[in-house]
Image (cartoon, rainbow, N blue to C red; front, side, top):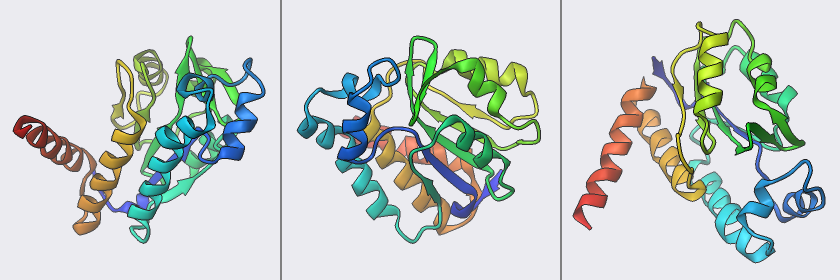
Length: 194
């Protein structure tokens, strides 16, 4: 699927500021991500906020849509936008639930929030998201490819990865998966040299 950066939406469900972090630390019933990263503000800033700020600075002007503080309703609404052909969901998985900005919800609610007419790519930047991906595929066979991880997701690594992917697509419209494979190959080549 040929794509340009303006057709890619990043949906950040994780806190991207210290105020967001502090708010999430107040309610352990609804929020797990902030506590899991660190009970210390400085550590959370190093692991999440600074990589996010570097990402935003690096992709400025490339045209991708960045949406912050995404809740379940906003997730569904973003997928319904005609210009959204690829949505990258940056969220947290905890005990069969996805943590949106306003709290944890059962993954069946995430599946139900996907509009039937969305045929684009869902890139789940969520730890251990295989159960969600399988449920999405079963309920929405019309969906395009679904990228997911079967293990932990390194927040900073994937933001660097997505920045490189956007740069590649911005250079010349290309298939999302071709760009994804090319960037992953670049990363693996660097790792082999070390």
